[in-house]
Each structure stands twice: as C-alpha cells, then as structure tokens.
Image (cartoon, rainbow, N blue to C red; front, side):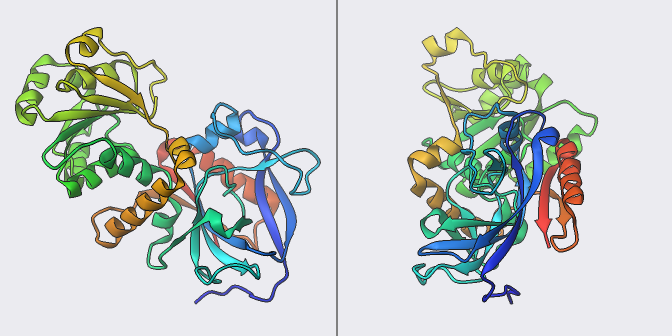
Length: 361
C-alpha cells in the first residue's frame, strides 16, 4: 500500500542538476526547491529508482547529441537541467483534469528522453507518461526504457523471421544479453562475440543459458576457419549483424553475413570507426545503417509504447531476465546534499563494474 500523503500541497524536491558540461563529478550539484500542487493535467511524481547509463554521462560531458533544455524554472541562479533520462516513478499527486487512467500510487515512466530522472520528485503532463503494472519489479521498471527497448527493436524491426540468424559483438553487454533472450523467444538464432578473457568458458555458458546459440571470442571472430564453421552452421540465414564496438570487430562480423544482409551500428565502445570491406557492398549488397532509440521514439512515440507492452509480457512470462544492477540507496529524509552528491559520485566511479542503480527510500 502506498504511503503517499495525498493532502500535501507543497513538495520539497532534491534534484541532481548541472549548468555546465565537463567531468560529471565536477558539474553536478544538489539543488533543493519546491513544487506546488499540480494544475490541470499535471502529475507530481515521486522517484523510486533510476539507473546511470552511458548516455547520461555523455550528456553531462556535453558530447551526446540529445540534451535537455537548461532553464531557470527550478529557481537556480543560472539555467540548469536535471540529469538523467531513465527511471521509474510513483504518482504522488494529480491535477484536477487528469483522467481516470492515472491514480495516486501508480507506477509510471516518462515517454520521452531528457526528462530529468536524477531527482527525488518531478512533474509531468499526463500525455508524457507510460503506466506500468504494479507487479513489475523496481529494477525492471527503472531500466525498461533504454536497453530492453533497444534490444526489442533490433530483433523485431529488421525483417528477421523464425530460423534466421544474427551475429552481435559486445556479447556481454546488457543490450546483447537482452537481444539473445528476445531472439530466442522468437526462434531467431544468435551468435555472440565477446572479448578474449581467462574465464571465457564460464561467460560463454552464461550467454548460452540466456539463449545465444554460439559464443566466440574476438580472436575467433577474425579466424577464417571459424567463419567457415559459422557459414555451415547458419546455412545461408545469417542476415543481420549488430555492432556496438566498431573497428575490426565490426568488419569481422560483417564478413560472415550472406548476400543482401544488414549491419546495424548502435554503439561504438572501441571508439574506432566502423570499417567495412568494399567487396561486401559490391558483391554482397551489404546495407549499413545506424540505430538510435532516442530519435526513433521522438519520431514515433507509439513505437516505445508498443515495445514497453511487449517487454512487460516477456517479463511477466519469465522469458526475460531482470538486468543485473548494483543498488545504491539514497535515503531521502536522512541524507544531506553532500551525502547525496557523494553517493552519485561513487556510482559514477563504479559504472565500469556494473550498471549502477540509485534507489530512493
């Protein structure tokens, strides 16, 4: 049962904001302000949890193409924005014109990007929210908007059918692990390429348990004998390559594709350019395209709503595993500004050790 005070007319908010760009730990500040009771179709939200994603960090650094507009509406001395794009909220108060589709205590996520999720509370219009079922865990709800949607659309939006194959690099990434699970449900076979490592067999087995049909190392990815083995295994049905690394890895996964196939680039972990052999374009009619979930949602918000509905079904049917996260607890009524900032700084320092989730209690 919700413990929300339904009669409170002023909400005290603590937000992680920034006015300038640079090193995230240097530019973030904790800002306290108030929200009055909601008007018309406004809804005041209480944050339950938010993850820290690479795109959030890139926004703070100023290198991400999509950025929130900085404003003075939070009562700051200079135009500022609230950090963060993904998170789950509980409805705290509703305006007089909000429909019966939303009620106090419901869990929601923002429809669009640049919402400002690194905050204790926020305010939104009804049309800008997606309602989630209450039986979806906090972690699933807080992390459903970026990695799972990306994986769902990569598997479902590019013409693959049951029995087809796809190959992906960065096989241990959150998106890649979700791709394997979603593809497995659809009857699509996945080859995952992962970095060479001492515990390769252990990690490979984990990925196979999640749905990948074959796991190879980056060294094997460049081996012609392995390529012949994959060609025999996939029997002319390796039609899609998912690239989030770039460099030689992108070249090597593209070489394994059959004629009239597509390589989709949605990341660049190596920070090296995508290098593709000319012969693949001439003799195999390779198509190379990009994917950006933020732009797709901006052009067609219904695509996000559809993906969320399908992902919820997969979660509820136990066909999709909850993302592994490292929880960091923000005690709203106990932590002062310095402690909140330190909590976020620690999470930022540990991003490379696993997806960091800030949970507000």
